[in-house]
Structure formats: structure tokens, C-alpha cells
Length: 316
Image 1 (tube, rainbow, N blue to C red):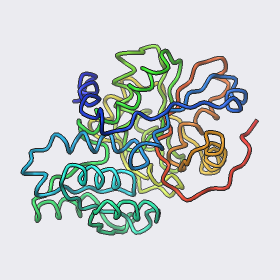
Image 2 (image 1 turned 60 degrees about the vertical axis):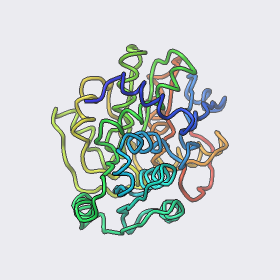
Image 3 (image 1 turned 180 degrees about the vertical axis):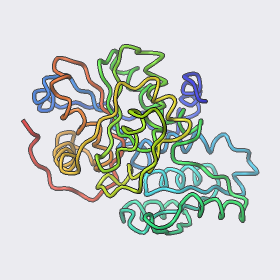
Image 4 (image 1 turned 180 degrees about the horizontal axis):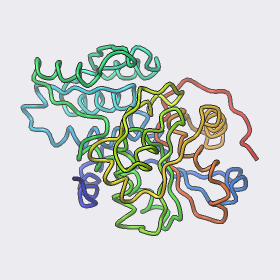
């Protein structure tokens, strides 16, 4: 199981490789929520998402002979790009299993880093089984998108940087898919800011995390249909779930309509590209606005790899 010390170690390894992404704010959002909100812009990370942290950290710990053989991953996009980019930077090669309906921009960017892409049907085929077969035949190391101690530790460095920059927070919200980012962030908040209430936010159509937290066991669902393609996971990870279970304040859900509104407004207000999955934390903050009034709130914007969406004013 990963621990806070692993996040600290990951931060040292990532120094000079991952970007220390900016923290931005918006007077309009502060006024709308009645809170002071700090956005950790991981949409401006290398590869366009926080996923680079976990991917580079994990690959950097592989033996040189394994890097020479190559790595494999399965992802709808952001983890795919992260692994492909990390492999290129470390002199390795990457084979990525991506669904046929992955956003075109994510497929294009993954290929631009030299990855070999294998397509599959996310609703009918098992991406893990496909990846395992490829890895066994070709001697590749699998880099999972979330259920890996080194991945979780790497993702936690985003929250570590946020706390280092802004200090105390009353609440922290972020997207929830498989739980790597949330678990890593919880390791940090437990150690540095135990009074901070940390929330995971997932699409209503894919609320396996919320169900799991309520029932006390990992719940598996069918692949959800949602605009949050990075949160179309079926189940929380074996490693991430125990951390989430013991430390998360709650898991919130938002509808696709709520998420679309949040995405349309956030990119313009922060003046940077955002994607629907990356805006789950902000959409969750909007749904929680009464409880956040007067608070210092952190939101991790996890990714920005999407086609442009026309902006609309934020809800009042």
C-alpha cells in the first residue's frame, strides 16, 4: 500500500520532469460560491493532464532492461498520452490499448509521442485482457491507469504542490474515476491537512465509487455512458479503495448537464483549456456551494484534452 512518504519520494523523482502547474483563481467564481477557490491546473501539465505524474514516476522505477522491451497501458486518452510521453522521454516504447470512441484529440496526441495504438470496443471487449495478452506475448510491462502504488504516489504530488502553495484548505474536490488521484491526494491531506474535507466527484451515470463507499465494498458497474470519458471506469482500484474508504469526506455525483455547464464556464474563467472529466471537481463544488460558503476551497482541474466547447456564464 502506498503511503505519504511514497508521495514525497515521487515528488523528488518528478522534479525537473513534471511541471509544477499553476494555481489560478477567479473573482467571478469566488463571488458565485461565496468562497475562496484555488484551482490546481493539471490541465496545463505535460501531456495535458495529471496522469503524467503517475506514468513518469512508475516508468522511472522500471529496470533498464524492461524499458528496452517496452511498456503497455490501457486508457481512453490521458493515461495513454502520459505513458506514451513518459516512455519517449525515458527511451522506451509504448503500446496503448484505446477504445474506438476515444476523443480524436487524445488519440492523435498519443500517437504523436510514438505509441503503437490498439483499438477496442469499450462496451463489448475487456481492455485489461487485451493488454495482458499483448504484454505476455511481447514482454511488456503493464502500467495501469490507477491501481498501482507508484501511480497513486505520483498522482498525489499534485495535491502536495497545492497544499505547499496555498496552505490550509477547508475542502478539496477532484474528479474520481479509478481513484488514483483521489487516493494519492488523501495520503497528502491525512498527513499535512487532516482537517481538510476531501471529496471525489464522479458522473451520476458512473457512480460506482459512491455506491462502493455507501456499501463498504467495491461495486462494479457496466461501462457508463457519460461525457466524462476519463471517468468511464467500472470499479475503484484494490489499492485506492481502502484509502478512499478511510479518509474521504464523501463522494459526490453530477449529471452530464451540470458537468457540461461547468466545463463551458470554467475554461473561459480560468483562460485555459479544460475537458469535461477535468471539470468534475468544479461541478461538485457548484453542487456543494451552501456548505462551502466562507471556506477556502481547492479544486484539482485534472485535464484539458478536448475540443473547444462554447463558453457560457457561470450559474448564479
